Image (cartoon, rainbow over all chains, first blue to last red; front, side, top):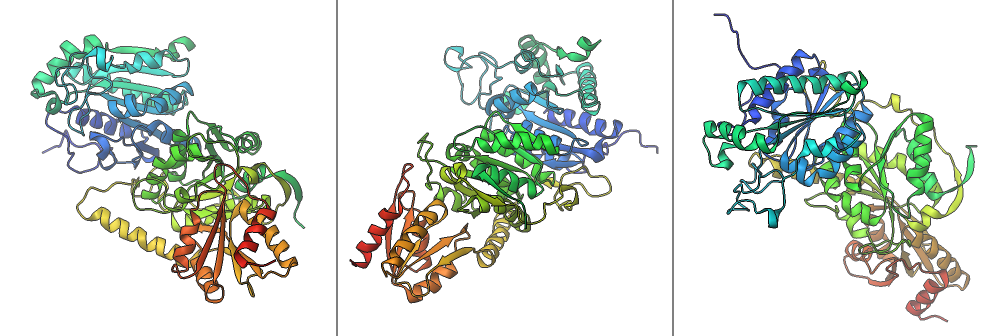
Length: 249
Length: 354
């Protein structure tokens, strides 16, 4: 029988420890495929965050490093500046990138550092058990906002693409989602673009990906996909937020 | 003879780092070490290296983590409050067994403190500094010449043992001008071999992973025990110190860095008055020169530890002498610098002489 589907060579042959319905696996697969399709796997160094995807250093079939919480963009800068021929990607969650690592991502973007950032926004702290994240929606329940996020006490969510689009530095910013096949295809396209920008030495690209967390949202996988469509996307609109290629034309 | 130049201690570090083949610097401005990044930015531009002025010391140490994990010699410099911010990163780097060089031009503390020279980061430097069980190789220069020479030594030790290395200077050494002889052949960074852990893309080899965590039951304990063996080897083989007039001494001063310079003048004054006083200058603060101290404690009953702090290294002197000797202490915290007459007075009090 002819095999028509299998694990891409950009992923290692190990069991991934993500919950059923989690979006990380989808994004991992897209990246794993792109490493092969773009023929960059053998010159890529990936950065795993702290959070659910800390184990990404076991999952991507390329050189990997696991730095302190939120410092992926700084570590990426160190690698890229000392090995400019390497393709460097930083894979980060919303606690990692938008809470503890806010300074590092803002400055890497402002420097237009020639790296690719994959930012998983699931509006919650997953690994630690569902605490309030900088991206938790107003009124959304978490283990540290059991009555729902109270904007008077806990403030507003951080919209990372909009925030970074206020800077002149970053080359490419786009928000996508992985809740439907259509959105997954768009995510693949955005990530391909983000890696290509780096290959062509264009500079900093960040793809923010709205992703399901059924376990900590207290929903089924199907409900989670629907919740992204109906609740998350209206607050975090999808689309390009910066594309300097258009300015260059 | 090698070229000789009058230069600031902070500039001597830069030349030493470049002569060691390091082409990666990341750092954040803080007094009294600003001459290092300023001069480094000019020199890196001249010779084609990476210079990054970062958004924080946290970013700086993590850029080092990346550059060093990529297999390159990488360094940062800062002063006390900035070094505190780097401790998380240093812990991760130690936990991932990656060599880097961190220079601390120590200033008065705690808190924002002041910008005067101090030695109050001794505990932090010699006890790991951040969380977890680890040590950093720590060298204490006492001249512009040593500020030039020690970066190469620090990189070699850091790479030999795959461990972070620190150079502990202070504001006075950094700001002082002295003659520096550019000894030794400069290292060509292109001729340095790629280390076995280097992240460079997995072409033609197995992929590599640099990490400081391991959640498999028992595995982290095992890794810590492995690291302990490394530390024991460093303690055994890398103690460095200098002794002055210790052979017949019945009082030995123990002091490092700037304090050692001050105390050597005090020893000279004492010797001129016929007082038998010697000086032990620890050069490696970790590993502490325990063996030399143990030897000296066989012949000498009194030790005077002089530090620009409330008394930190004095603990190591007590440990090295098994607490069996009389350990006197003279300390100047918060940016105070002792003078030779001040130390001479203390010597006279201890020896009860004229």
